[in-house]
Length: 101
Image (cartoon, rainbow, N blue to C red):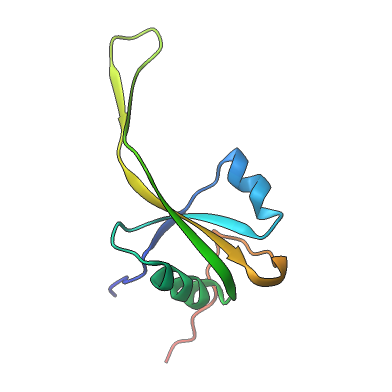
């Protein structure tokens, strides 16, 4: 089965966990995903109505590891913050059950 969803994974950080109480959820998405694609994917995967979608590109980051002479590299990725209508809540790790046809 081919997965055409632009959503790669949900992002769980301290800041995003606090925003979930206000109905905002963070997802890592593909680089070519648009706001409309993400809105349709959330509707299809979770069955929730979306109020707005904000997209940002996190830059790559290189830093020196503590106590070592090694460089740690984080790749560049695209992130989407999805706001649900009426401040509804959902579990971002569980998908809506798909009916077999």
